[in-house]
Image (tube, rainbow over all chains, first blue to last red):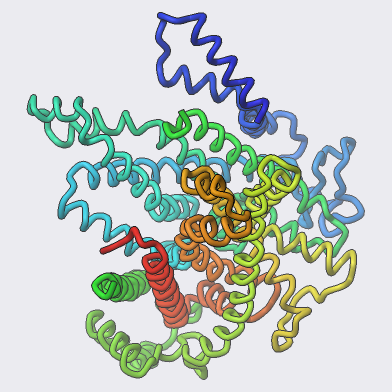
Amino acid sequence: MIVANKGKIKTMAENLSESGAGRSLWKDARMRFIQNKAATISLFILLSIVLFSFIGPYFAVWSYEQIDWNAMGSAARVGMPSIESGHYFGTDDLGRDLYSRVIQGTQISLMVGVLGATVAVIVGTLYGATSGYLGGKTDQIMMRIVDILMSIPYMFVLILLLVVFGRSIGMLFIGIGLLSWLDMSRIVRGQTLNLKNKEFIEAARVTGVSDFKIITRHIVPNLLGIVAVYATLLVPGIILAESFISFLGLGVQEPSTSWGALIKEGAGTISYDTEWQLLFPLAFFVVSLFCFYFIGDGLRDALDPKER
Amino acid sequence: MINYIIKRIGIAIPTLLILIAVSFYLMHAAPGGPFTSERPLPPQVLANIEAKYGLDQPIWRQMFNYLWGVITEFDFGPSYKYHDRTVNEIIGHGFPITLKYGFWSFIVAVGVGIPLGAIAAIRKNTWIDYLAVGVSIGAQVLPNFVMAPLLIIVFTLWLDWLPGGGWNGGAWQYLVMPVIALSTSYMASIARITRSSMLEVLNTNYIRTARSKGLPTKVIFFRHVLKPSLLPVISYLGPAFVGLITGSVLIDIYFSTGGMGYFFVNAAFNRDYSVMMGITIVVGSLTILFSLIADLLYAWIDPKIRY
């Protein structure tokens, strides 16, 4: 509390000293975000993880599909993490290098998370903004549809989709994205209802701008703050869903891998004294999720109009 | 209120029908039927089998027959994979198990989550608060499929206190780890929601009034704070229930408890359409029923909602 107050006093002092020069919403938000230590550190860690997943392969001795025949079947004795053998994170039971596998899994999990969130954000924002802006019967019907979709057990439907259309990353993120836009659309609709009676929207309507243009050019840009917050909170949710599916063996298929698949493999062999097979992917998974949640919270504090 | 109930049921029934129709069409859009195998059956045999299961009729007819069977006789048809078992038998076997640990997980999630959140809100910015917030963030990044292996490492491999899997008629030793693994993240969410909504309530004017007129803290808490701050929690119960049921898929696989999830994933790998559909429908009706109850409860508690 004391720290927060200090921050507020500081901003107040800055406000006084630079009175005159106005600050934009985004600049304001950026400053508030930087003052949030947990969020800034999380952002830094997350960026390092992303960077690592791109630079990491250049330091790898083994590629992710190469099999170390020495370690195969005797991972507990030979495949432990060591610098000399080139297996920095050890090997799995098939003798594949866990360092490369973790990097590959990190790339795929993050990609599914970000792409899935993008699909969800685009669909949800447009749907919610349209529903909220048009109002009346259209709004009611559109929101009823969301209500109906919301009470469908979503993981079961996702597994159904994966069984029917084949298990592939593409299907996985389309499925997850298409099913996770529902919350987004509700939030966006609520915000749109607030916005649509503002003067600048009325002005646009009076001058004869089409509904579609008003939604895309005036409503959506004003929603960006809240969209950014929920998109950040959506990514870990989608990564969780993907990992869950992959953990069941229905998601990402070999030779590709993801955090969920790696955790599954590691968890399957815990009784053979090969903890590193679980702990390395698990550490990446847990740390990244932590970071996403903290960044999301930081963004919410920075952008949420309620807090101001 | 009665209008609202009717309206709400009016949504629930089409939802269920849509769920059934969509899953039915998805199943039939799938390439490869339940009887395609590596060694193709003679066409005459295949035709006979398809006639037996009614697969030679047009799709709308099949769907109508299926729906009719489900509604009138609660009959989900035979399993395509295990020819000697009906879907009803499979569900009847797995469902009680899922329900048992699902019920206990729900109790734990609510029974621990709400007090934890409430204590954190009342003692804001003390070590209890920080502990509760820390626990709830930690539990959020440790979903059930991470909790399960960790629990097994600690309680089965290191401490050797609990059996690593199995059901054994639901003896408590076999129930502990599934319930912990399943309930933790929902407990955390419930604690977080309770904390933030209670903080909001504690800052309202009427609570300040109640305090300034000298009401004892206990009375303020139970009479004025508790009810309004539980409203967001109630609206979360629907999604939490869905999550618990979904999580059962993993629990069954990991702890070999033999509930519905086990049969569902098995059916997914075997392309056993009728089992998948039966389970989806049962789970779907359950979630729809539950969100209906949660909504009605919400409307009953919150006097501001009048439809």
